Image (cartoon, rainbow over all chains, first blue to last red; front, side):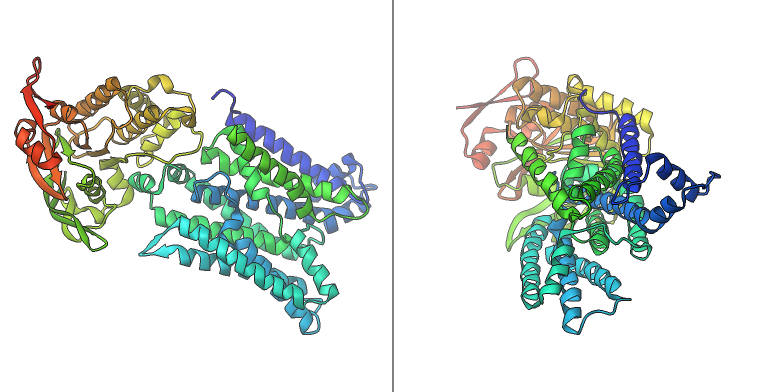
Length: 345
Length: 255
C-alpha cells in the first residue's frame, strides 16, 4: 500500500517527536523553565562544555525532579508499548492488551497488599515503604502471569485461548481480592490505593528508576531479535512451526517479557492503561504490521506519547496534577472505540 | 526423503489412521484422495510432525522427523494448511517473504526468490497489495507462493505437503496451481497433495493414495487406483472411467 510511511521517515519522525516531548517534559511544569535554558542545562548535565551562568535553578529542577520524571515516562511508555506488541503478536489479535495475561491485576493486588497490609501494621516505615510497594506490585504481576501461563499449559503445549480465559478469571479474582483490601482500608490508605491505581509519574526517584530502565533495556533488546518469528507467528502457530520457529519457546519469551516489562512499569508508576493497546495499533496504521519496524517504532511512539500525556496531566489543572492514568484512558478509550467502529465499516 | 512405516494415529480412543506405509520419492507428485473424515489431513498432520504417531515412525532422510532442528527441517519440508488465519495487513510479498525465514540467503536473493514464487503461483500482479484485501482464492495462492519460496527452487531431498491447495480456486487456477506444483516436482522435490477433484488428481499425480476410514484402500498409479470399483467402494459413487481423448489419463465421469 502506498499510504504507508516508509520506515526511514517513520523513525526520523518518531525520533524528532521523542526529542521534542523530552525537551518539553524537562521544561514545563509548575515552574516553567525557558526552553533555551532547559536545553543548555540538559546539555551541560550531559557533560558538554557550556557556560553555566544563571542555570543553577534549572539544573536543580532538572536534576532533582524533571529528569527522573522524564526518564520514567520514557521507560514506562516504551516498555508498555513493547509489551502491547508482544501480546498482540501472541494472541494474533491487534486489539489485545498487556493486561490480558493478568500482569496488571496481579500488580494491583501486590500493591494493595503492600499499601493496606502496611497500614494494618501501623504504616510502612518511610525509608522502605515506596520500595516495598514497588516490589510487591512487581512480584504480584509476575506471580499472576506465571499462574495464567501455567493454567494455559497442557501436554507441554501452551494454548493461548485457555490462557486468555484464565487471564480473565484470575483478573476477576485479583479484582475481588483488591476489593476486599479496599474494604478493609481506612480513609488515608484508601486514598493512596486509589491514586496508585490511577498511575502517576509524580515523585519519580532514581532509586525506583534504575530497575525499570534495566528491565526496559533488556526487553527492548530482546524482543526485536524475535521480530521475524513474531511475523511468522501471525500466520498461525502451526504455520510458524513449519517455518522452523520454536513456537513454545517464543510464546514463553513473549509472556515473560510482558510480565517483566509491565510488572516493572506498574511497580514504578502505578496503573497506566491503554498505552500498550493503542500505541502498537497506531504504529501499525502508519507503517504496517512488520515487527522489524513495529517493535522499535513502538518504543519511540510509546515513550513520546506517554511524556505528552504526562504533560497534559501536569498542566491541565496546574498547579494541581491529574493522575496520568486518567489522561491515557481519556484519550485512549475513545481512540480504541474509533478503531473498533472503523474496522466494522 | 520423507517416509513413514506402519503409522497409526489415535484420537481420543479411536484409531483414525492405521497401516500407512509411504515413501515420498523425489520428483514425484503423490495425490491423497478419500471421502471426508477418511484421515487425509490427519495423515498430513503426522507427516509434518504436528500429530504424534502412537505407532510407527516418520523419517526425514535418515533421522526421525521429531529429532530435526526446526530451521533445518523447515529448509527441507514445507507445509500448506487448508486455510490460514492471518488477519494483519501485510503486503503480499511480505507474506511470501516469510517463507524465507528458515534460510540465511540474504535480502537480494530472497527478493529474487519471492518474485519467482509469486510468478509461479500466478500472484505476481498482486505484489504491493495488502493481504487482508484479497479474496479467499487469492489468499490461497499467496500461501502457495509462500511455501514454494520456502523450498525454492525445489530439489531432490525437499518435500512439499499441500492440504487441498485448490479448494477455493476458479477452474483456471486449479490447473495453474497444480501445474506449478508439477513443475516444482519436476525439478526434484517430492510433493504430497490432498485433493478432492478426481480428475485433477488423475491428470497431475504420479501416484495416488486412496484412503478409506483411515486405512489405505489403494496406492498406485492413477490408472490403477481410479477404477469404477474402487471409487464405488470408497466414495459410494457410480462413475464411468474413460481415457482422456487428448492426454490419455483416466477421465472420471459421474453416472
